Length: 109
Image (cartoon, rainbow, N blue to C red; front, side, top):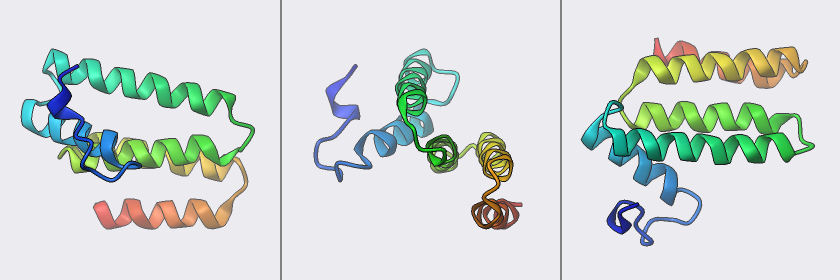
């Protein structure tokens, strides 16, 4: 993993996602290195989701993934992740959260 991609100068919470979005923007989703970084990030995030007792963790992961795709310039993948987040929030019975996500989806269309 090239060190210059994951810059320590970025805010700690955003550094990996921002760097990953930048890598995907520069090289594209079909680039093998970019895809490897994306898959690794998704797998680590899914591991956190699976071990969390918080029901909103899955929704928050999908929102983070949607914003990553959006920042990388892939609106279609972003919309799909937003729709996944909406469905999960709706199925969890969190109507207010589901409505907020629906509004984000509508703003993208």
